[in-house]
Image 1: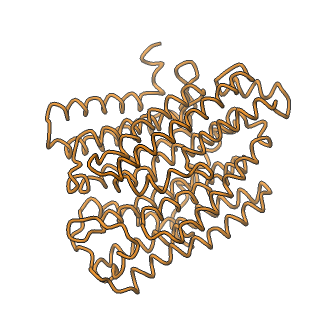
Image 2: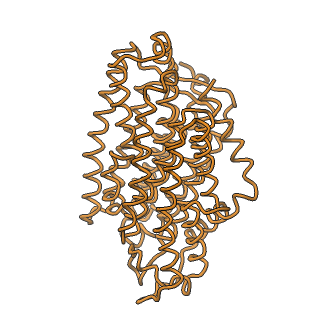
Image 3: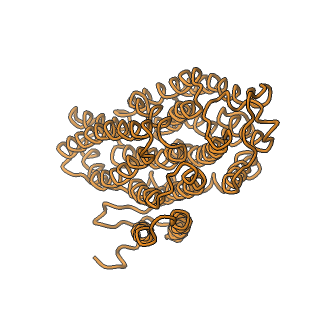
Length: 480
């Protein structure tokens, strides 16, 4: 192994080294170094983003083919890095006011990002698991980062226990796949599947079921969603904002690669699994959120629904479906980052509020924030011409072209139902009277995040071509 042979892994190596260096910097500088480490962490993510963009267009592999840097991975990595950067910036005010300003916080986000980047480049079941666990271990700690909070501790413990269960299922599925194909590499598995004919053996299908169950937990798809509402509500709000974006994008991208690369020739054998969990996720996300009065729990159920929409593209099993997923993930990133920036700005004096009813009268006291939050809500509901409409449009068109008519219709009906609780928030902001208005000051970082994501969400329809072309090029690499 030479330094030149590691070229596909340069972004991950740089980010891992930067995380270690920032950890040492925090140790030597002691208390008060959190803000410096946070901004240096954002700078490290920007450099990583440049390194990912600078990689050649053709696919490259490393570590004996276990790591693959291709167009699909690059697209997903860019979204992950943007989401992680926004997560650090959004958290600066919160961790200071809630006595969580410890330098380990941004370092954990960087290490989780390394794991996520490894996940989307995994070309082997072993590298898949290594990336998944590096991400998960960092996320378990982040969920319980507010050590003096019982809710945060409970969230971290629930996430850890259920995460360990899902890892066991994933490993069991991987061992069955290895046993029936003789390899853990995606290329070799695909060759073994092709050689066995158009239908897989029962043992291999059972392995795929367990692998899908483990991955469904990571994307929080029904029926493996039980951890999401409690963890989202109990974890510190900036951690919830991070969970809702970057890890979700990485897990959905990994799900696509793990299903399509090794098992693309037997899509008919696993398509039913994806159709069922997609349909159930859309339905649960639409109906369960209606009764929620805590906005973080509402966003948790909303995220389950949105995962269901994304999995419609995977159920299609086509290049058009994967393109729809990538477009959807990019738009989902902007909508959720902006929404959580608004949630982090909701304060009564010095305490953060999370109740939906606390948004009453927001349009009078914070008209700019109310306007942007209304835009995010309309976009999440899929109202044209906002970005969220286009995300769902490309997903449902892929399903229709793959003759999954029932799934597409179910998705559209779920969108109509979910519009109720999104529009309810808009109604509360603009028409209800506040018992106690929210505090006036708004941190510069949160205002900037809201502005950037708001512009993307509101004006995406003006010039969507670059994102569509990039998603198309990325999707092609999964269908050589």
